[in-house]
Image (cartoon, rainbow, N blue to C red):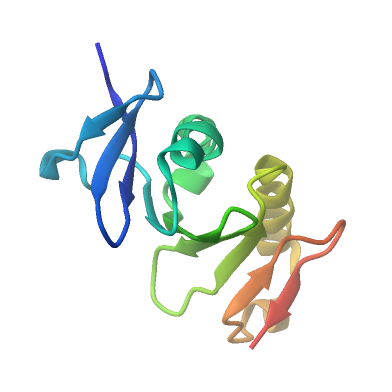
Length: 136
């Protein structure tokens, strides 16, 4: 049975990618049940790297409850938007190494002093080895 894995919404089309990495017609009933991807994303990226991410996310309850959606500016510039008000977006850059990048962000959230967490960053950049760079 084909099960939706992620929902892709582009300026010209909306569709689902299923667990077989095939395109399915979008259904409103699955809008909030699968990760949402917006922006400049093609079927190849959606059924490849982004489907890999969606499968990984199924086993990550910490991130399932926090990630609202992904925005693809280009294949090498992907952003993650978190749930909740005033949450900074996370810059993944390329999807390669997403698990390590999000592990680094989780460590940042858990181990940063309160004065760092209280800063109103608009963006947390995860593209650099061993660091999270906050921007206003």
